[in-house]
Image (cartoon, rainbow, N blue to C red; front, top):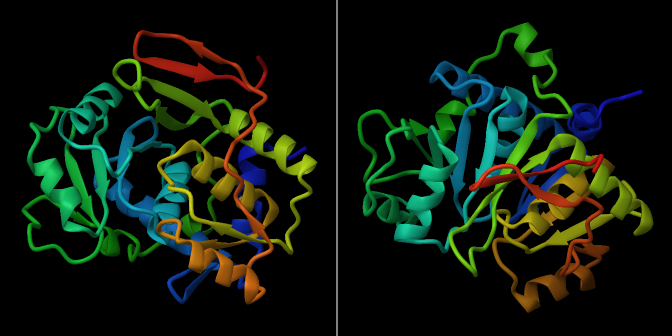
Length: 283
């Protein structure tokens, strides 16, 4: 019987030239996601990151964020999404509490400027920058160079190092009643939840999902990206919700599903420390 991690990566490694993501007129196939995520993971390893480390992602929705997610899973590092609208104390708190060793910054100047305005925590060793940047400094890593890292034959075929019980995502709550708290989501919990929900909703590989929810949010990231990966679906990715764009996607026949505005769950959260809790699929 296949593992949860194997099922999550099945379409990535077998669907080949089928479109996985469509974004702003460009298409990324499943083969592209496979190759780029492997190269990104190898680049991170070359920078000294390894299984158990945490990489914060402070970026707007883009295919690069999906590539990074899969690369983190391949290497076994925890994916720590951060609301791209957070500023100052909110960002500083999550970076310190999560113990992030690296942060992936979107291609917009605002994310770099906000990071420069806070005192970086001691654990934060790397900034990974997408796109061109006028503020790049010594020691920064370029995302475009990481995804161009050469692979050996073994690395081009190796399975992810992550196991079902491992933490996939360290997700922070909204912090409406206090400081945001980190919740550990395991691969087993995510896949079990997404398979249960999408089985009821009859997701199929032929579906094409319009996804305009942010990828720092549990719904956009899990029910959007992970559910689509599990079913080998094509995702029409939008940086933000714009009614005319979504309506056009359906009117033109490009989309047949839209990520709905809520995420049912079959797991029960439990707190294991003052700052970090966990979701266990078996609870």
